[in-house]
Length: 213
Image (cartoon, rainbow, N blue to C red; front, side):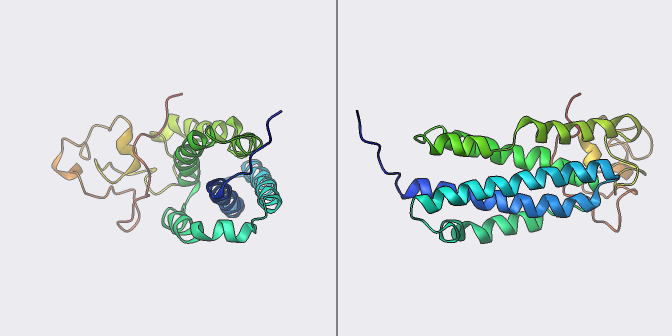
């Protein structure tokens, strides 16, 4: 029988990265829940936040078992990850679910590719704490639900009403409406701000929304 190998420092580095990501996810979801349009959605996001803090504790326990203080393993990632989340802080519910669907999915895919190279039990732990399909399905359902009336965005969001901008309004990702704010019109040129956006500050929303139903 082969003797189990002791994980190297790179494993602790990855566990620290994922652990801090889970801690941030808990804080972000709990805060974003206040932007939910109703109590059902608010409760759903808080339930997901609770799952994130449980995942963080599992990772912290594993780091401690390896003789690595969790705070030391997480420290290198605090500044860059906090800066990312601060710069993409949602301002309304549409931005909450957009960030959840795109940003978290990209991060999960990246971590999943790295985790595949780990030995057990660390491989199983990291893969298990990544967001499950329920999280992505929740965000996708919210985005699809907004589509029938306002081209993919709730009427109360910054770009939920008014015209269309080819570059800065998130509705650029769906079929642009015809009329004076069409991208073919001089009033709808790239770089302009649609009349539905507030004070020239359109949402920081990735290209490609809403996802197909």
